[in-house]
Amino acid sequence: MSSSEKKNPFPIHSEKAARLGPALVVEGEIKGEEDVVVEGQVRGKVTLPAGDLLVSDSGRVEAEIRVRNITVRGEVIGNIEASGRVVIEKTGRMKGNITAQVISVEEGAQFKGAIKILNKT
Image (cartoon, rainbow, N blue to C red; front, side, top):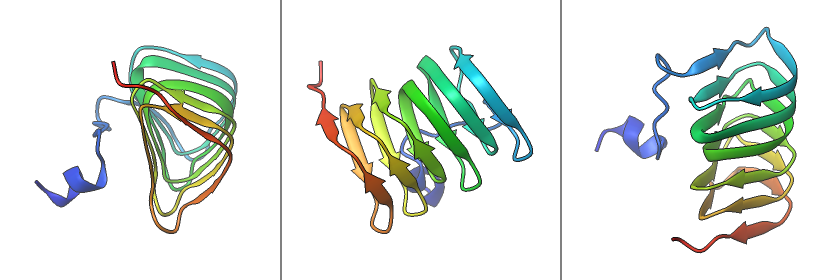
């Protein structure tokens, strides 16, 4: 397994993902069926039931989030509901509640909230 596969348990192929660049601020609702990479700011609601969300080091999301999988490298304020996996990497900061089947908080990550682990179906 390569080091990039170890780093990202559900690789978001950035060339295929929708990308919100570091200079963008989105207010409102993001809905869709594809993967999204946030390098800027999102405020509102994110609904990607079949998609993965990556909040990059420079990304900040203040939203209620419903996704398949999420990796937090930047900052998230709000609740996360994932049908799959939530990963908060060592650079990640999260304030809110998490509901998911698999939750991983790396050493050095910041997390304040409650965790609910779903039964695998």
